[in-house]
Image: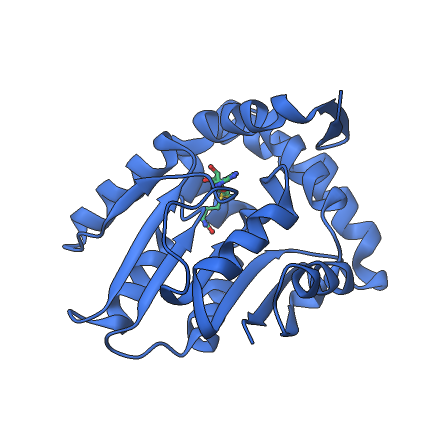
Length: 243
Ligand SMILES: C[S@@+](CC[C@H](N)C(=O)[O-])C[C@H]1O[C@@H](n2cnc3c(N)ncnc32)[C@H](O)[C@@H]1O
């Protein structure tokens, strides 16, 4: 049996996706509210920065992986205009439904697709930009997912990975206290679910740090990789170029 981690737990590799699905089925209805509360709105600034770095042009083809409730898809759609396309995808139908309804309420209709990042149903060399925000951490085979992202990008296309990362040393203690004492309680209070928010804190600790993720992206086919730390490394934006 091959094992992997689900937060701090060791689980059979075959079961991780099911555990992750349970988390996002549970949090989907309160996902956006919890994001704002947990990060005091900071996730909006991190995403706005990712959109700025994406530097999209009218007509660009974009794939939003693990797009969930659609923040990035919506922002990208405004940039690529009517001649471009943003495909909003996620493995979890509940998250995607919340996102699709939200986009429609804002007058934006995008192709929306349930799909696993580890087996993307798109041709080679198709997209100008692929993004994955706060999704890679949850994937069972991050290397396979990154190789798929590289495959579907056009040569010179870019991958943006926005993800929680390693905080700067002076912030560690306060960040650990907040993650393990406050987050699960907030989850219980607002979403009636403490264990999903405990998983969030644990999964962040198990995710590769800035340099490790950079190396993993390079091993997965990205010729050039750089990263930008945000808010003392609480989050990082990795940019990989297929070259
Ligand atoms: C924390 S949410 C992020 C949603 C959105 N991108 C955002 O930034 O708000 C993580 C998302 O990753 C999705 N996910 C997990 N594993 C996945 C996989 N193998 N393929 C595609 N999406 C996946 C989950 O279903 C969930 O919607």
